[in-house]
Length: 234
Figure 1 (cartoon, rainbow, N blue to C red):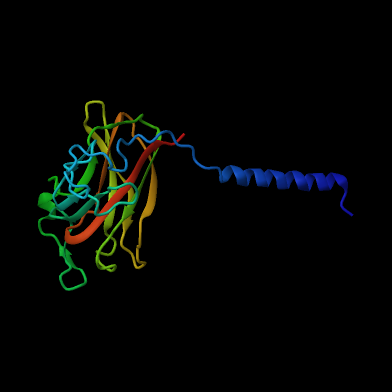
Figure 2 (figure 1 turned 180 degrees about the horizontal axis):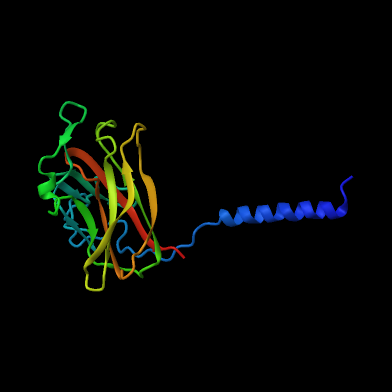
């Protein structure tokens, strides 16, 4: 027969384990979303028709070279617009041809010469987001890789985000990789929410978010983004 003292001890241990489990499962607390126009809904100049191509989303810009930087109503998760990139025109580590129905890739002979050029396409926040060095930030976004062919794309390549950490003068301290979604053996169907926690380096006062491709060159794969969040982890 179990003694009352031993029963109480068992209950105490069980309670401690349950409490520890609850603490481990507690959701992370985040500060407010620091991204302006996170869903690309507001535009600098609206088109005459509802389905037209606006000039640029408010508080966003583009860099690099792409067949199309698209934020019309062609692809979006919520609201009426998203931000898409259709192909990269140069500067990648591979040249890929999908005209045969499957992608055949070869090393890009110009990759080394163009590595320092701003050819890699990306949507970018127009103004630095204020951050504090040493603090942790959660960067999350919805990503989709739509295509007429569900098997299109290059294995191990796809959508990749980055963060440029900036000092008080606007100089780049370092660049970190954020949420990414790349082609694998498993088909990627529909929108996926991907998140990464990053720590701002010492001396960082600003962050610039970039939504783009991984470092490759192809002409027929589209990546798209919506619902961008950048918030301090409390």
